[in-house]
Amino acid sequence: MYEGERHQATKDRTIKEVVELIRYDLKVMIEEGSLPAGLKFSIKRRGHKTFYITVRRLGEGMEEWDQDQLKRFLRRLVSLADRYNRDDSRIEVDHFDTRFYAYADFSPELKFR
Image (cartoon, rainbow, N blue to C red; front, side):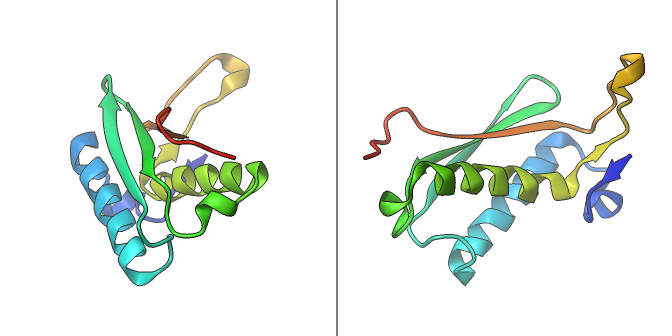
């Protein structure tokens, strides 16, 4: 079983409220410098338990990142969201029990070298 560090404190909140908390966390991290300045993103819910974090504008210096750095950055965004998640799935018996599914990607309008 996996339980993110912020799951217990927010377990009674709706997914919509959790998405708002994640959005707030990301904005604070940009302001503090933990995420690149100028980064713009959106978070959209798809269905009951799924949401997507979409990078709309690259932050400072990200234009120079190679493909591996960009992939690691997307994984970091998902791991930041997963702090609110829990997963008690047991795939060997086809049992899926997660609080939500989070995905991250870059907007198709972004241009990469």
